[in-house]
Image (cartoon, rainbow, N blue to C red):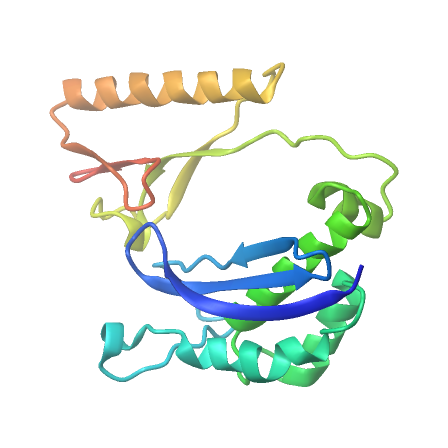
Amino acid sequence: MKIKTIYAREIFDARGLPTLECCVVLENNAQYVASVPTGVSKGSFEAHELRDGGDRLGGLGVHTSIAHINNELGSLFIGAEPDGVQTDLILLERDGTPNKQRYGANTLLALSMALYRAHAAVEGLELYELIGQLCGFNSVSLPVPLFDVISGGAQAESGLSVQELMLVPFGAKTVRHALEIAASAQQLLKTALLNQGKRVIIGDTGESISVSDFT
């Protein structure tokens, strides 16, 4: 199944910030969509995130990334079978910079993820199954999930220098069981902190506790 068209558009994430979404449309008109995350805390060695600058949306718009996909990068793959690995190799060579400075990591990531999803669909596989096969694994299983229970760094007002304190529910029989363990632990933690006179709120990412006077 070949690629009919590829396009990108600007969407807004859970924080209300603009980010990029890419859609790959196959010959049968099936659509495969991927959107890229945008973080508040960024390390100095992270790949370059391309933003428009200027006054619109505080300079955070992604119209430049959209133009790269709609006017240039997407056309490299139209008419071809979706192939995730080949896509990445072509995009890396096309950008040609160590930190994705030319097109932006957000631009390349949105296009890459959408094409991987289309590739998996053409192969009749789930995305995780395709990735497992490409990595040489005969079978795949769900990993033990990790849960952010206390936020720090730029995502909170706690003054805690560590960005996240994670809970790992070892021994959980299923993912559902792991979720129940994490949810119960978070509620117990919240109660304990409130009993100590702490001000507890939900962190910026929406799933963890931020303690304003954590010491």
